[in-house]
Amino acid sequence: MVDVKHLTMEELQASLDEIRQSPKDKGVLELIVRRPQNGEREVLEEGELDLLEGLVGDNWRTRGSSRTSDGSSHPDMQLNIMNSRVIALVAQDKNRWQLAGDQLFIDMDLSAENLPPGIQLAVGSAVIEVTNQPHNGCKKFVARFGLDAMKFVNSPVGKQLRLRGINAKVVQPGVIRVGDLVCCL
Image (cartoon, rainbow, N blue to C red; front, side):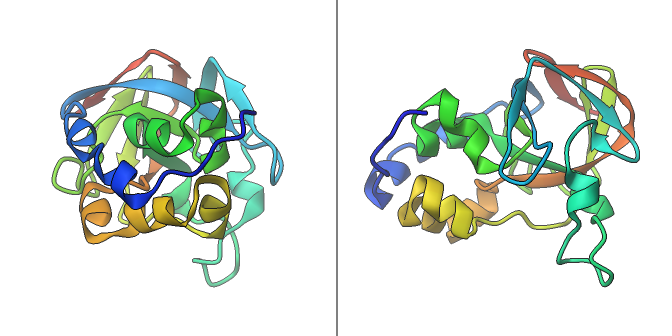
């Protein structure tokens, strides 16, 4: 991995116009990352989405969640999705995208206005549904991309545009591949 200097708030904000130009109806799946164990990442060209497992081989189901009363995996947080323009900005090198911890990186407008909870997206032969669970920057995000990056994605504009990303669940299993179109249904 390339060692990079974290961007300042001014450098991050200078790219907002480009981020706002993300496609609204038809995006492209640019990266798939599976997390087999905590701290491990596998970049995939192809993945399988499953109703029970989410991204097959990912640790979502076994890792659990602090947002459930019993600590089990949260059904509305199977998939973490981030806008590829945002991660390209904060990571500065595609080899570092996987550090964000998200499984899918899509060149698409992820804002609540464009993709409200409940909207479904076709990806490859699968269909996923955007959920209402927030996806925020955390300590790991700060360590990997800098404090200004976290403040940027969690700012009022960042929350409006969902710069840190969205959560989704699988509603129709199928195969997804890097380069697949992502379309609103």
